[in-house]
Structure formats: C-alpha cells, structure tokens
Length: 203
Ligand SMILES: [Zn+2]
Image (cartoon, rainbow, N blue to C red; front, side, top):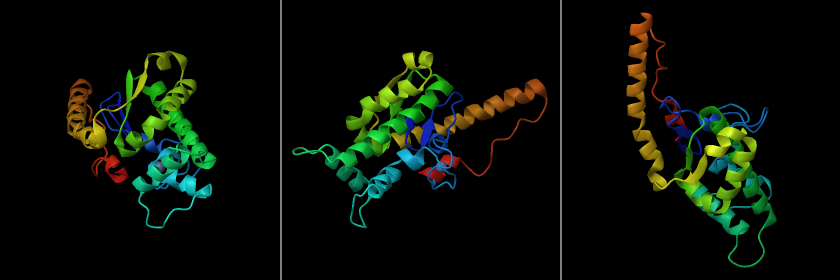
C-alpha cells in the first residue's frame, strides 16, 4: 500500500482511493475539495504551512510550499540553538493527524506495509516517522496494527507517478471483475464512475 498525502494506491481492490479526503474531524477545516474536516485539510503540505502561519509564523508571500516546509523543519529542529516550540507543536500535531489517518487504512485494509511517499513525505519522514508509527498503532485496532510496518517509500519523489502507473492496471482488473460479475449474474455491472480518475483533481 503506497500512501501519499492525498491519495492511496493499491487498496484491497487495486483501485485508487481518496484517502486524503476521508473525514478527520466533523465541522473541521475547509478542504479544497469543498468538504469540511478532510485529512488533507490537516496533514497535507499546504495545510501544514497554513497551520504554522495561523499559529504565528510569518513567511514571505511568494514562499512556495516546499520552501515553507523546509523552513518549518529548520525552525522545529535547528542545527544549533533552541527549537521553536510553535513549529515543533505543529509538526507533532501533523504526526498525530497522519498516524490517525493511517490507522483508518490499517483497520480497513489490514495492509502488511504502508509506505509514505511524495516530496512532503520524504521531507517530513526523518522528523516524524517514529511518531506517525506510534500514533497509527495507538489509533488502530490491535490485531491489524501488530502486523503492519510503516516505512518511508524508497521510490523517491516520483512515487506518485509510479503509483499513477498502476492505475491502468487497476482499471483493467476492475473491468475484468465487472465482466465476471456480468457473466455470473447476467445483470449489468454497476459502471465505474465516468469522467476519469477522481484522484487527478488532487494532484
Ligand atoms: Zn477534501
């Protein structure tokens, strides 16, 4: 199971799920998908930077997300001098949000491995991966939590592209399943939703 902030590839049926848009908090933060309280509205890179700014950080207006995340990490874990407690607490919260989100995946799919990928995952993992593991296991049911490992994906920043490459295969298997179902039941399969993969919107 390959996890990026925003999408999951390789679910139980080989299809892309919208993990980032599962609800983390009712009546929560506005997500860019239009709903309230999505995981992405808390743990996504954009949300991470926004939460830091809401907590008092000031960044130049034209700072891009990657630079802002780098600045947050530098403030929370400076090479010398004391850590910025605000940045540290934003980072701690993020680890808990991600862990809680991953616990949903663990309970739903009982995966053997969850790999954190994507540029934000790669950047954050050295600082938060242990906490993400701890929270994921604490929030998940004990049995599936005991068998899962949560690691950093080794595919590099292109993991999303690699994940996307599995989607045509997922479509193929979905089509094959629909064909089998049609033969067995002699009733029309429920067609896949049209309009292309919904995950594209989130990229
Ligand atoms: Zn959303």
